[in-house]
Image 1 (tube, helix red, strand yellow):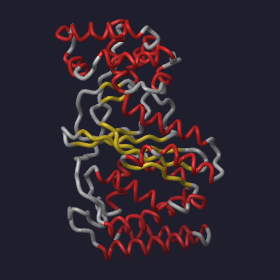
Image 2 (cartoon, rainbow, N blue to C red; image 1 turned 60 degrees about the vertical axis):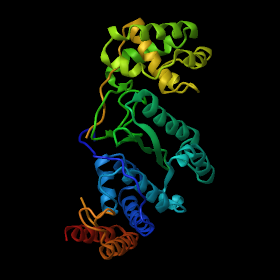
Image 3 (cartoon, rainbow, N blue to C red; image 1 turned 180 degrees about the vertical axis):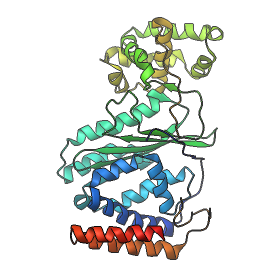
Length: 361
């Protein structure tokens, strides 16, 4: 779960409508079959595995290695589940761009319609925190533009979100799973996938514990002192490690004063509370981490956490164009498996056996 590389170059273009519709159909029967066999949390567990997710995109016929696989597969799963949430016990919220910002509203709306075993507000908090961590606590040069939050009726959840670095021409995908996330700010990911590594301010690394403890205390200092300390660091930039030059390039002490005022007026109890302080984003966190290193001698980690099949072809014709006949046949076979799986356990096992034999062909 924490090893390997997913190659995600940024690609432009759109998924053909006909292919997306087939992805929705095939995705629907695959999800239903998994739920019949092992329950909705098994779907969440598998989606949190970056390799299984990548393989799913390949099986659904999408371009195997581009950034578009993430957004399109998540979109297809959302459509596949839509209207069947009550029966499946599975819910998909969020998406790309402006749709991602509506994730909290979608969670609350679904919570009103369905009897969940967890308070929807807790799910909203998890959604917001995962985005805040990957944008502010893990500063790796990739700006988030996609956020999908998938949860079960029992309250387990998976997050799949993606950031882009246009200058590098690369995307980076972040996977979360609630059962594996014991602490939002200490090694919380199941995986972070990208084929390129670079300078990264990693405040959720285990070795950043001292920095996480010092930042909330520092945030309670008067804003004037923090601004003065930041200017002092910038004046001494030639005497500091090379990484500081890069981290300081777009920090403006005068503009950060208002950020410091927000944390000063609402003193955070810990690093998690600091991340949840409204108005404190990536630049404010970065500035505080640099000042904490100067004053307290608590450097943050700069370890980049990125780690690192075809069934029906790919939309870009690699390794071959999507075979529509085979795609349709797969959907028909899986639908029959699902229908027969509903008949009972013995029939379900027989159906799954036929599915296994079909997969070997």
